[in-house]
Structure formats: C-alpha cells, structure tokens
Length: 250
Image (tube, rainbow, N blue to C red; front, top):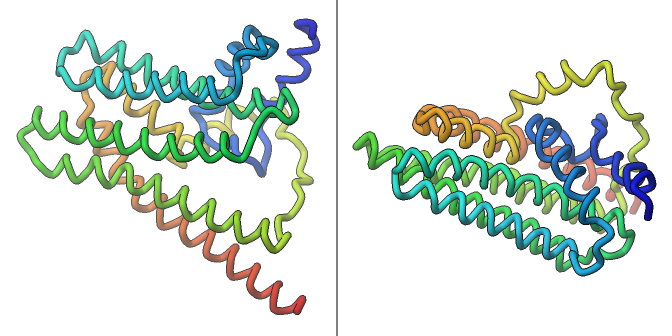
C-alpha cells in the first residue's frame, strides 16, 4: 500500500468522537498520534503483528517501571520516556488490527486488556513503594494499591457490562459524527479531568521528570476512587437498562 493510502486508512485513529474509546486526553495528545506515526512505518511489514506490538508495549512498561526502583534521578527521565512509549505501542496494536481487517483475534484482545491490568499493578506497586521509602510514610504503599485498584475496578465493570450488552444484542450502534477540529482544544481540556488509564501514565511521567513522584501519586489516589465510583454507577445503570429492555422484550 502506498504512503498516501496508509495515511488515509490510519487517520481515523486520530479523530475524536462523542462515543468511542478515545476519550482520554493523553491518548489523544500523545498515544494515538505517535501510534499513527509508528504504523506509517510498520503497518505493511507482515511479520509485525498486533500481538508483537502488544509485546513491545508491555516490555517498555516493565522496563520503565523497573527503572524507577534504583532511585537514581538519571534513570527516572528514561523511565518516563519508556512508560509513555508503552502507551504509543498500546494504542498501535488495535489500530494495526483494524488496518489489516481481520488480523486481530479474541485472544489478542484478551492479552491486550489483561496485560494492561498487570502493567498497572506493577507500575503503581513500584511507585507506591519508592515514594514510601523516599518519604518514610508507609501510607504511600496503600496509595499505590488504590491507584491500580481504581483503574482495574472501572475496567472490569466496563467489560462485564459490555459482555452482557453484546450477549443480549443491546449495544446501540454509533451514529454520532466526529468532533469538528475547531472543538478539539476545549474537548481535550475537559478530558484532562477524567483521569483515564492512559492519563495516569502522563501524571507518573510528569512526577518522574520533575522529581515529584509523591505529588503525582497524591493526585492519582485522590481521583481514582471517585473515577471508579462513577464508572461502577454508569455501567450498573447500563446493565439495569438492559435488564428492563430484556424484560420488556420477553
């Protein structure tokens, strides 16, 4: 495929929609644009599969997380770079599967989502441990656990809900138009306050680069429990609506 054709096929991943999975500000500003650039180079190399892209994403996240441990500030900048590069590849695997139309698999989707959860546990366990050692305050160990738990709980609720809706064929088709380019700045600004999973990698990276990992952890732990409660409430309401619809249809 020519470069122009690849650009045309991949540029949909850069758009913002009102309903969809690209609802996080760091994914819009960093993850998806860098994934787009990666796939311009890699998308037509047949040996590079979506699962290989996921492997690379996981390797970057593990390496970046482990580089936080030695407490050397010189390592922290590299750790921030690797952690955020992991997001680039994490955004690229799904885009590559869609680009190749059929190269993805249910196992690949399962691996992608489960490895994201494992990566979050690893990253925030290390962050909590390091900040606790730096400050001498053991509550940061709990903060790291709460940060990971908030994201995993919300994600678990989402996929349980979507499984129910798909099983019942209650998933509504997406009909909304893409957001006009002129609306991107304020849409992105509003998404800063969602503190979605990709956004946490930005805040951890910022804490590493500025040597204020404790500030980032405070911000994350104060936002993740409310985010989890909102997610649980929203998806519970979706299941309740599906129950009512199922009852009316029977």
